[in-house]
Amino acid sequence: MSKITLPIAELKPALTGISKVVNKRCTLPVLNHLKVERTKEGWTALTATDLSTFITVRMEQPSDGDPMTVLVPFEDLQKITKSCQKTDNIFLSGDQESVTIEYAVGSQGAEAKVGSLPVAEFPEIPRIKGDAIPIPDDLRQSIHQALDCSSTDETRLILNGAYIDVSHDDGHYIVGTNGSHLFSSNSFKLPLSESVIVPAHKFIGWKEFNSDGEWVLKIAPPQAKNDEAHIQISSRRWRFITRQIEGNYPNWRQVIPGDSSFKTSILFSDPDALADTIERLPDHDAKDHAIGIERVGNTVHLLWKADREQPWKQLEADAERLKGDEIKVYLNRHYLTKALRFGLNRLQLTDAMSPMRFSNEGRQLIVMPVRTSMSPTAAPHAEETAPQTTTEEQPAAPSTAAQPEKTPMVNDTTAASNAATEPVTIDAQLDLLIEEVETMKVTVQDHLTGLKTLGTKLKGIQREHKSSNKELHAVRQTLKGLQSMKL
Image (cartoon, rainbow, N blue to C red; front, side):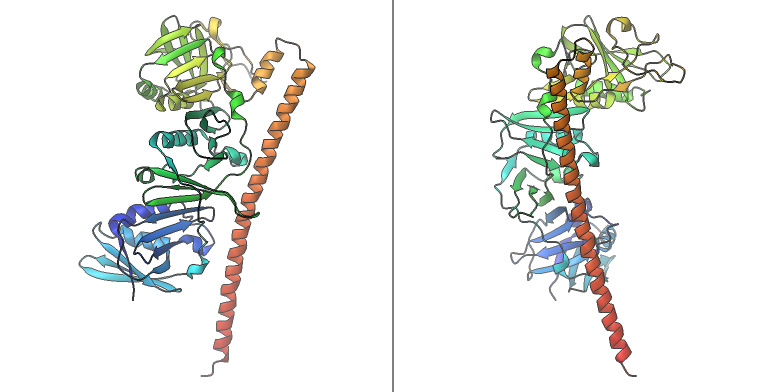
């Protein structure tokens, strides 16, 4: 009988990567199986799927034997693999009903016979026929950073990925945002005719996938009316295929401040060392994780405190090339350390209430400030540079500590600020109404995308139901056969 050979040294990391798409709690039995296939050329590949995403890995070397395909329960194969030595091999053989796994136990051989399913039940793997687009290391880094800034809110599915924006001929962008901070990078051009969203997935950030050679991107538009568009990212041995996120990405350019709006510029000398320092400082604010940056004369301070009732404390930060006005701002410390870890060491500021920009060459991170109320315990110079109170009074007794409040990354903030000093004109009202309409369009599109995803899940449940009915019918036929037997 023909057998498929799987070296343990390759199988263990392969199962680690594939496990990122295997849902062990899934009720559709075939999704808990791996498709193990040997081609007529001798190449062996393992594939797993959750219906929306397919992950395939190819073994390093071809092996002798006839073409063969079996479905193997993931948990059984993983359990046996963990007990084997790195130098061992596993051998698979079987048919549509069962698979035999042969492996070494000490100096002896052992085998386990596990249940299987017909190969035809495994979902069809999409074939991506688009042009291959190389993704160099710097572009891959930008995709990772955009994904790190993307939203995890399932109600805003359109933001759950890295947006490759090719709408402007003068330069293409990688964008990621969750509504409170926004990353963009633009030092490249790709041979794409339409913009696309790379969905966030834990496999994309997996170390082995990123160390397996240069990435190659393929985009597959739908071939028919009811088909789904797919995106494929391949390395030397790995292939990641997933459905595209459909819908119109928000107009991210409108929240990018113009260069002329910034009044202060700070260049941090050692961003990684500063990020290490910030991560060691106590965090008094479990909600907004507020931390301050203050520029006074030729000195830059971090403002922090260990408790909400304490006054803000100063810690000098290494900075150079200070330009512009003295200023004090507060922001989410996680966004600050993220910018510094990205190597975005230039900070540009307008005032305590406006978006700030961290940048380095073609990459930038726009961060909305955290607003804090005035208090007697504020740090020195607070009366000169601290932002104005915007938080409404609460029925409870007032606290002497600063109460941070998150500022959303939308144009409503700017509009509200202008309304405090200028009369509201008809044109301004129309602009606000138009912005509300555009926001509603994006929300409706997000809901449509969510409904489509739900429809796909329902189809999977329906397929499982049909499979269960088929099994139940087979059991009934068997019982009828047993009842008709005469002893």
